[in-house]
Length: 302
Image (cartoon, rainbow, N blue to C red):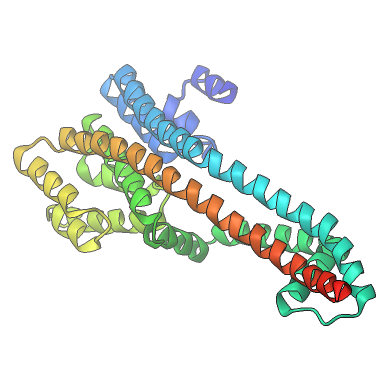
């Protein structure tokens, strides 16, 4: 901001100064401020920009809130399982080794896993870090970004809420840009450039290309199959009645509410499933470890 202020003092416009720091100010920010400066309505443009950023932040907070408990529960469960494998299982393993009995396959599997965690934990740590780093680097590539974007829109159980988030963000950005005075073609292009999902961005670029040729945006939007039919129909009504910006913002409001409902429902489903899954893992480890012990006790008793 200090660099921007210095540039403005030298006689540059705000959007020209901001455009030099592309890592900080996105095309959305620069273009909305540009239109506000040119049209003499900078204050209203900044308010619209604030609405867009606030809506994005609100969705992020909802996602963080909905995922907090499952993440904490998963970490605690994994910690308990690791503690059992590292502390309890080796003690039973030494008893079974002294007895010389043949161990069932589940027991042998658990003991091997325990030995790996005790003696080769650093290998697992390096592997996890390497996978996370490789995933992050691949996500930065075009192919990786497209893959994870496709995965977000097509993963069973998660695709519904991810599509709702994509619709809410895209329609709000597009609606605010049109309301700020952008031509539809420019608004579509900026929305595509600032979209976090590569698949949705490609669909918007395709719509932009058709609109530049004089077509309506609803036909290519329907063919892309990214936005639900109801959204396409509402956009069509907005085009026909000349209220496209208001219709897009109304869609964003509807889907903001649906995102919150979907996230709450998803958290409600994930929590018991996670508990059941971790419980099954703990029971499997306990049975695998204790089964040879009971057999050994029976042999001694006989």
